Amino acid sequence: MVEFKKITLMKSFIFSFFLLSIWGSSQIIDEDFKKIPDSLYFRDNLYKYIRPNHNYSYWKVVRKDDSLTTELIYESTKSKNWNYLESFSPNNGFFEECHPDGCFTYIIAYQNKEVKYFTDGKELRNFIGFINNLPEALLIARTYNLWFDDKNSLGGSYKIEKDFIYLYLAKFESCPISREAFFVKINRKTGELEKESKGIYYKKNDCYTS
Image 1 (cartoon, rainbow, N blue to C red):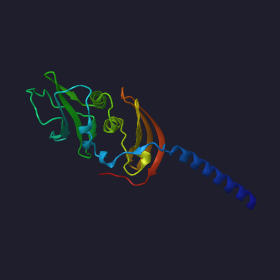
Image 2: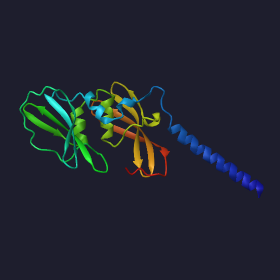
Image 3: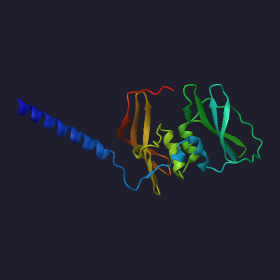
Image 4: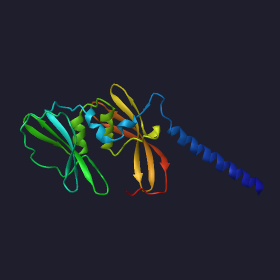
């Protein structure tokens, strides 16, 4: 009976070690990946790096809250030499956040005597066009509900090549609190994004409600 328990415990240990080995192998990051700079964590700091797909006379990033109050987040130039009228005020945007009250972000651009609005993820990706840099790639990834973990390289690393940008990003859940790692590949020309889950690497039973 004692011998049977020993064998059972040994099998259980081997199986657990096998599972941990599989999990560990999926967590490995190539050495040529770099940590995403902490300075890029706040999205409002990223818009200044956008080089739009078209040569707009002027464009700006606006945030609107549930009281319909608007806030200018970024503008491409301080010199406004146009007389265009903004035809309407959007009721949705590509980033819906500011919970629990709620707000959303959108772009207004001026070109050839026209006012253009970019109010969802696809339109933001079209506005960016070719992905010139890491901040643009992060904004693209955010439209797929992915962001980077500034405390763990498994959810916050990148590598830039000629045709693709590779990232390790995270998907955050607030209840229960967890972080799931994703390996992301973005085509710099088309903006097409492919992702592969690398598993949950952080989890707590607590809930974040604010």
